[in-house]
Length: 194
Image (cartoon, rainbow, N blue to C red; front, side):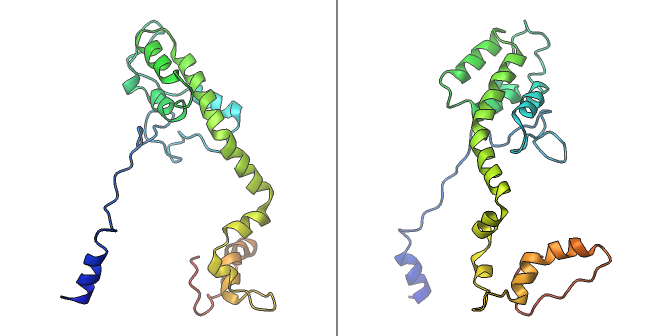
């Protein structure tokens, strides 16, 4: 038997085909009902304030068949309900309240959007705090995220090699020099992408 095949057979029990991991909402709809995309301008970013999140969710598209507050709606075709399935699951009874209120016209779309916005704000708060922490301390950010292979490029005297300088500072230097500035060639053996 071929040694490579024997080696594969030996580990066949260890290797397993990964299972499918799908969320209840595989694609988050944007504020206008289309797929969420920055190019469409229908996103809510992690850096938005609470007031901006509330203002943007107020104008979200809902069930197109529900024209008036007294009309019953269908949460299965409403993009706001998809957002509820993502951000309101930790609040007990919220999804049932939304489904019941929408199908019986017990709640209006504005109330539904406001409840979803509050849960989105609760969900996004810790993410926003971490983002602000990294934003306020850029040195800690660069120490944390700098690739290990570039960290190890320092010589014993504490100077950076030409490769590391280019990988880490090339873009900043280009911005400072302007469009007419000349680019320095990459140092030999530099694996960094520009």
